[in-house]
Length: 491
Ligand code: ZN
Image (tube, rainbow, N blue to C red; front, top):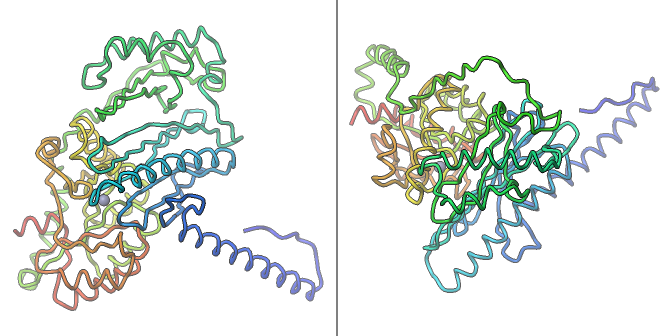
């Protein structure tokens, strides 16, 4: 909202001014609608491989940063891309250029592959994480995962940096003051850590370590400043999902930085990690919750036992718009559902994840970045699952009850990496594909039976639009809404 000038005007002038203002705003809004529609319809008209996609914008928990999500509308060329948007045009343009490049390459490669192959799967996934230096500057770490048919999948890391106050995008050269002695020290520390990493953390040979840690600026282009350390990312062999990472605590590197990047070091070193045991068993709090529910249920046992059960599940969230709307509809029906959350989204929308838990719904783990885990190394699978369990517990105080692998894809290797029960579904509403409240309802009507687990996604507005009708239908047909764990207990 803008404040108009507070001059005193005769009433007629005020009316006229307001009317003009309304007209201007209305035309600006129409123009905006027109523009955003054209974005949605034709993502990039310059691109010969343009794929229709939907673009959403949402607030993030990092001040001044919005998250743009672009999801393909073309089932044959699925992609999901997330990137940050700041108030600084130069930064935003840089990010957009980066995304456009990756997307263009991928679409070109798909088109080439298509000439020789008929039915094949392909996927592009770009997500990012945000870290904040104690001085308030942001580091954005982009991870892109690509795969086409039977070609080797590719994973890449790129980092971007922004001082959101003044728009500066500093490089490591800037931060080390272009000082070659500083660079030499950084190189020595990095080399030492890579050499001491065990083979699960990096599979660099001695020669590779030497090559990649040489004191050349080009070797230190991908980095992030977290609240505790300078993290460096190294190029990675495509046959291996592990990106070699070195994390240098500020205690060791503080002196190398320009003043504005020096942090105040604590004297005491009580970095007690309460999270050493990330191998989650079902926790007590969820058990006691269930005990409470059982008590309540006993009163109406007669009704419940004869009722048909259905579990509504929502994947890929939390989302500030859609999840909150889903919660409202669930509350209207006094229903409990299960939310399979992505760790990366929980990190961005902690307050939404907390809302879900506080409303009494069941929490599930859906990995950190939504990769196909059957194509990932066991380390990567482990990290994807355990990091997500950890953040869900940190934010909500509750451990996830079960794990739903992205795309429902898992194998023994994936199962070995978690104690959580694997939770799939039997009714797929395909809401991500049709984005239609009517089709959402008809998929449920055609597929539901007693004990069904229904798959939906709390990131598509159409799903929130159609949920009320779905729940009304299920209720009229004698279904009670239960969580995934309650379905599993009753089977
Ligand atoms: Zn999913």
